[in-house]
Length: 178
Image 1 (cartoon, helix red, strand yellow):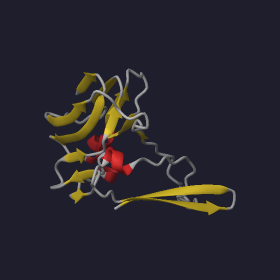
Image 2: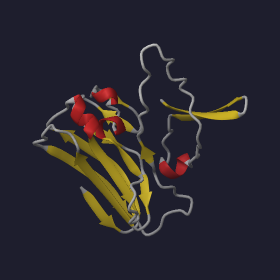
Image 3: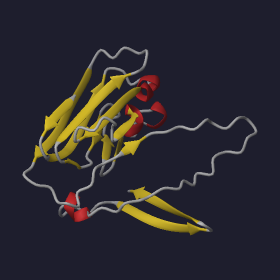
Image 4: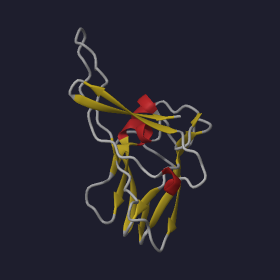
């Protein structure tokens, strides 16, 4: 869908599909590669990446993602790259997509701050619990990285809150996007 050489920032992605079938939204995969890497920095089911959780495209609007009328998929996360950016869309479902409309906006720039970070996202699903088996505890361990809000959203307040919770030997980070 996009393969551009140079230094810049991916600013906005907009998509709409001929089918919003839950199976297709889960089986179509979006991948984003930075700077000629073979492994994608972003690899997720299309619907899940754009907020159509469980394959349901519903209308919503937030600072980073939007689906204003329940038919389009928008991402407004600034994603800097230093030498190359590539975006792919793969239909891994058995549902034929007759039409895919998209627009990917980016700017090429002379320089990026040394502190500009690459955007990464992945999707993973564990085996669901069997009947009678305890459910998920919903606590995940990992790393959180803060970013300079002024660098990304000049003069725009960002509704993101990151909190730290210490529980025995583990530290949990909770990220809220309002």
